[in-house]
Image 1 (cartoon, rainbow, N blue to C red):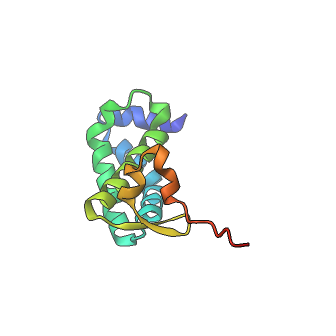
Image 2 (image 1 turned 90 degrees about the vertical axis):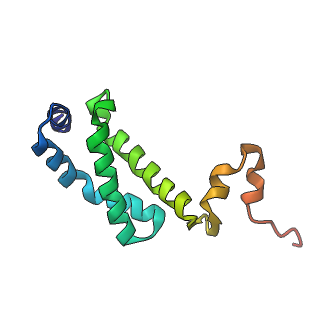
Length: 121
């Protein structure tokens, strides 16, 4: 309930409320991004980008009680956009794949992403 009040205060122009949200969520945002992009330094830069987006888009948040979900979605989208922009590869299910292949594959083509089974047993 306290986070809802803080979000509402921020939406009403309270800069201290934004600082409170930043302090409360910055580490979690960094860890989430670093888990996706595997680069601590860039994760910190991207975390700051996330909070800049939050600052400018807070009025788009309709329900303050869903702030955490909204923040996570912005965080993940920011990390994925970074990977796409930089054509970075990521570790996925013990196989290294380009993130573009993961997101551009049609649902029916998912079998192409799976390792071949050895049927010589």
